[in-house]
Length: 70
Image (cartoon, rainbow, N blue to C red):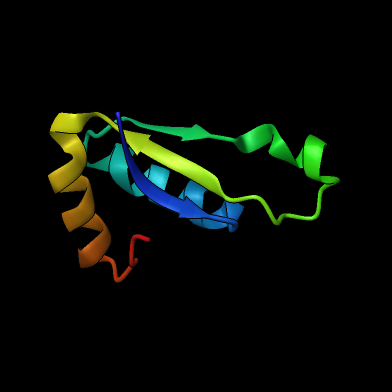
């Protein structure tokens, strides 16, 4: 698994996940429930992971939709 995206924006994670699923790429969000530890402030980033073999295509999809990966 490789990290595709790291962000504090939960809506961005959802959008990217939907875009990737539309292209047949499985994405796995991590750290979704960290808000319990941070007190729901939204300061801890969440990560979106993809399989190693899908990383190149997933990055291309993000570029095509003007979503910059960090």
